[in-house]
Image 1 (cartoon, rainbow, N blue to C red):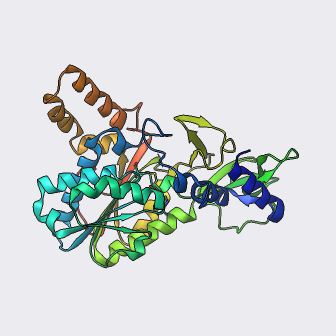
Image 2 (cartoon, rainbow, N blue to C red; image 1 turned 180 degrees about the vertical axis):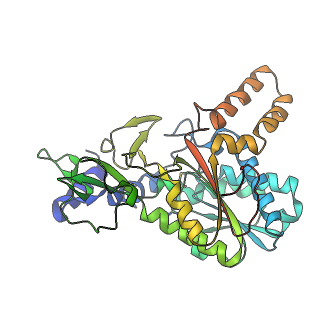
Length: 362
Ligand code: SAH
């Protein structure tokens, strides 16, 4: 077992099994050995490739969406353009460049905010964005953002926030926990403490013995913070993640290391841990704050935003191999075998009315 695994084992030995949420939080953010606190996991040499790292087209279309949201909000200035969980800073770089080209009034009146939990990645983002010349500010929570209208975009943020699992065991729901087996290795167990009866979502309450359901209070809490801010001060948000548009039972906990799935307990702190995002739950939270919500698959959204035209324009300046590269990026971002179907996007806004990239509002 690696160093973080041993640390978790000692914690369990001294104070008993820990929840899936606590296990995930320790693995991702332990100050000495956590996944995001110690490394840059992105890109071909890392563990996984995210949409902004696939192609500049992704961040460019996000910028186009942010511009139209700003226009729909009545062109407020000053305004904050924020990204939460910016990774390497690639999407923000493409957003800043594109807004500068298309809407100089917004570019010169906006300040750009990066909300990042990992000091290691903050340093990485500062290096990536130094050359933009834009007014950039870093915060470790969205509550610290200046009080003014906000346009916020996030990619693969919510899947990285901890979630809880409940398991139906002996006819009742219990917290799914991480404990030690006889050999001292980490294993899943059904918790023994009684669960608050309201904890299990109504739609899944009658699921079969052995079923697992997932809820994510930390994701809900972040959405509440964002939604409260938008409803108080105006603006809009755009959130990409893999997940489902409807709630249902199922175990979606996964570990990815060096582009391969592996066991959750194989390399604590060295693998990316995520679960599917329950967009229905996030949408309900945003609606409860009086916001308009629209959802789509990533593929439909990007094509609706003009991905095909953008790919064509970029490809026109390239040779055949370059064009084949752009076509491959297109498939990866929007195709059914790439991120097009599994990934979803949700837009929320304090104003009403249609938003580019989506069908009609609901
Ligand atoms: N958006 C980037 C990175 C996605 S990985 C991309 O698409 O490439 C998740 C990112 O969210 C990392 O930068 C991680 O450090 C950050 N993060 C995780 N929890 C966070 C939180 N509570 N607040 C802010 N950032 C967080």
